[in-house]
Length: 123
Image (cartoon, rainbow, N blue to C red; front, side, top):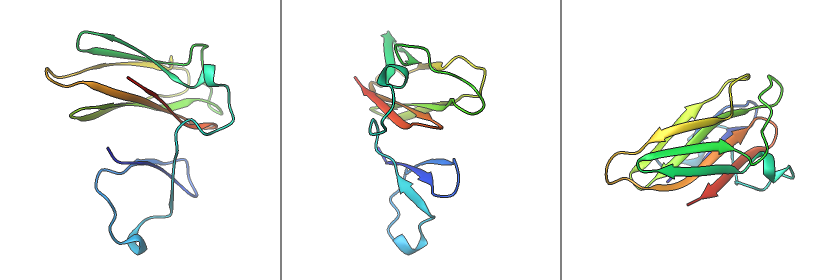
């Protein structure tokens, strides 16, 4: 899977699907590293529950705020065959349910907090 990046002058998040071979043509972005921000892990690390082909991802063992100024903006799951994502908006519950195709497998869950960055939980 590719890496996650954030626009240097924006809140835009990017997932690299194809490597940028000419760095001079790369947009002004910075690579994100999961679980490196000094913030409450209990509110940020994804909690994953798998029931058959359904993968439920809740954010944190303690509920994360979903306010305009502080919220989870996206949940992404990495799978053996690729990945899936769900955008969230303030006021929504910070969770998502994904359905895997037969033969696919869950690898990891990621979430992005607009204040505290990228967080990850593996299988």
